[in-house]
Image (cartoon, rainbow over all chains, first blue to last red; front, top):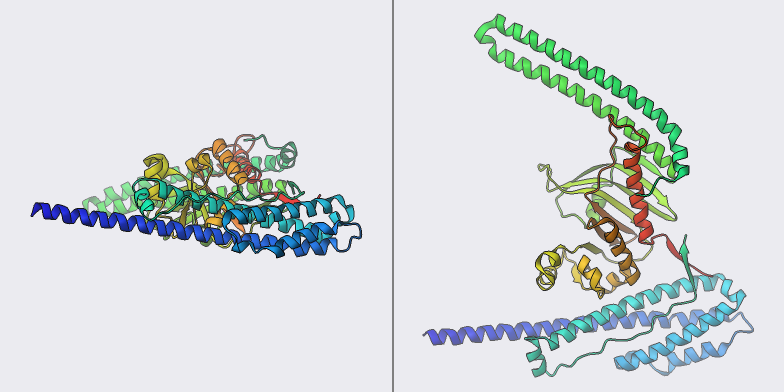
Length: 184
Length: 313
């Protein structure tokens, strides 16, 4: 009778442990997906800045338009939402580099730099980049939680049974536009 | 506390000197009233006792009632006189100081941040009784703010405060959808990192725990938010460093609430800025208390860099 009780209790305990571990994986996986989709949304906002930058430079006869064309073609060539995280990061970093080149070129042109539309746009860039930075940090925090759960005992045992693997954090470049920050 | 700026002292000194004369007169008047009241009580008690001896044993209840009545009336008039004098003086001193700070500044001795605003901050529990005084509204740089002494007790019938200090509401220029709260990290300090985090992971008022990557900040504060991304949008590495600077400078007195358009900061265990009729206004009296509160609030705004805006070159 005692042996039966011990066996039954062990089965209940193991079932609870498996259930808790499984739910914990699902919770972290969903958190990871949510964080990744937030990151994608913020990156989409960065993409939407490109047509606005094109509008800013269109009045200038001397601007290097190839910079805008290169950036636009980068966007058209590949949909970063269809790429795996590592490739998405490489692609987005290229777009970030293109935007930096365009804003640097604008800053070299006094007329464009002082135009109201660029002043407003710079504020938008700062805002969007702050949101991308926050989303990147939230995603990487979710990655760390997920990796901890699949590497730490006892959840690591079930993670190996379910063949769950580590995920790398994203090393996404966040733009630091050519602006000044000062007290009002 | 920094020394008051010379121009502020220059502006307030003549007006506060006039108020100082008023204070002395009021103090003398109060002392006279107190002396008169004590004399009246003595005379009243003698009369009551005389009446008691005249009535004999049957007069004992009348003597007791008479005694309480005489003392009660005297105490009531003394207290009312004190409160009225102090209230007027407090209002006048506060007005002089806030006028010197700038034309956007206002002061009201008997008002405080509204209870609905205090509850909206999320920094206090529900069903609390909220009272306070000394509302100051102003502008530091481009940033508008208001603050007051606030005391919070568990309920209307309980006099013991669960919070006593200053509550500050400052304009915040980030667009937010939800609420993010930052408290001193008591659980992890009391229970240890692992158990403390488990306890905190249950959340706070429907908000979930946010675990940030800065270990020093994590050790100092516990963060709860509706949205993990928004919490990080507010708590940038720069903002976290600034909040740690405040903690280093003033200790564990700060709790923060970031909401749409406003940051609320509860600063606990700060001496209330009250006037006292028996203390001189200048140099270390009421003016010092007022200026210390104003200095603290402007220092918080500067340390958190809430005046910083982004400008094009």
